[in-house]
Length: 100
Length: 211
Image 1 (tube, each protein chain N blue to C red):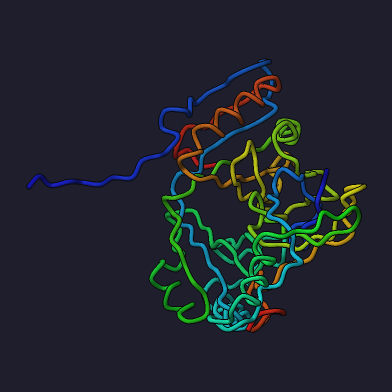
Image 2: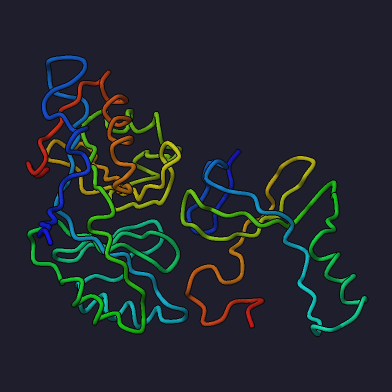
């Protein structure tokens, strides 16, 4: 299996490490937000969808350019639909998408 | 207090056995050498400072920072792409390249520098069968149309991180590849290079014999 790194091109999957689901967003909540916030964090930290089909996931090109990537992959066919740089990869942009 | 004298030595002091090894008596299929005296600095651009780094590199090295998957050559220093917005500034000593201090001054505020001169070991692989030997251990496509002279990659060889690039062909028109590996892994990879080349006949140059 090969993964097309946006920086290096198509590379052997052995150069990459899988991290996990890229969909969860960290809740933007006050520190003492009560049980409602606790529930949100419980979801964010522990709960994952077990998708049959297209997922967004983090991959790390540790055996290559050492960039974090976001891949759209089908869990049923293992086809990679797209691989893009995760926010913060590289230094070209003064501020990356998703960065505060 | 005893006085210590620190002297640097080649990480391949034990592994490298000069001379002819493996098959055949005719011209060797693969030539291996260790480029032992190098100056190497990792340059990593800081957020949004690409233009400043390009300007400083041009002034200091006479070369633009390399495009992705490429090297760029100045008069003395070769700049090797090592990832998005970062490169290695490499030169063979004793050529008079800008010192690390000069580089630090030139890139002050625009890039973060790390001196890797003694941290990496440079191995040069050339010859008519160099590509055949490398094909056993790298997943890179090294065909001329995909990896021409001036190409660079960061990849893994035998589970070890390697900076890899292709220099100008040698006098016989054979390809010349360069692998930059962590010194602590160089012994292992050197054995791998030699073993993989034995069937083609391999000529190993003595340390310090140049290339």
